[in-house]
Amino acid sequence: MKALILLNPQIDFCEGGALEIPGAKAYLTKVKKVLPQFSKVICLREIHPANHLSFAANHPWRRPGQEITIEHNLMTLMISHCVEGQFGSFTAPPFQDADFDEIITLGNTHNLETDRELCNVRNVELLNLCEKYALEDIKIMGFEHNNISKHLLDLLAPKVPIIDSAEILKFKEL
Image 1 (cartoon, one colour):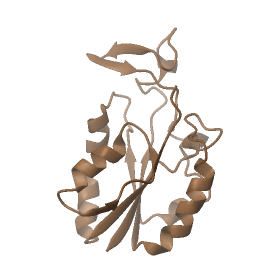
Image 2 (cartoon, rainbow, N blue to C red):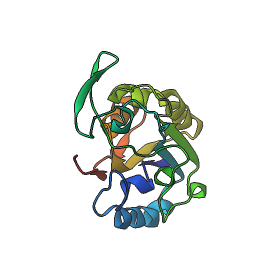
Image 3 (cartoon, one colour):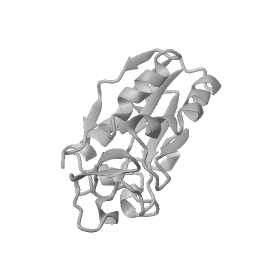
């Protein structure tokens, strides 16, 4: 069975969002048109609480892009984004949640997640979906953040052939 894993199709990654990606709205329109090619569509999205430790707003006198040590880890502070219940965390048009067979949420604690931990939080859930749907090939599309596409490839490659991972857009640098 052929599947699409769509990364972060959220308002905060579109033009005008907190981590806007130029051309994001046009890109999502293109992705929406190819959905019929896939038997299953799995959405991976970020949702963070407002008090997430990586947000500069939670550290007095700090700005996005500054590096500080938190919990013994060097961390580059981010602008608040994909905050739970806030407009930027919602699925971006032209998509609606009903377009997805499954939705997996990443990053929904206030603690720090390193790049790999962010992916590993839900890796078992994703692998179970691959087994449940007997996925034979997967295309990964969407918006890159925290090197998640690389971690997905590392996770899935031994289990499922990945047919293409090239269509990943990156957010603007701070």
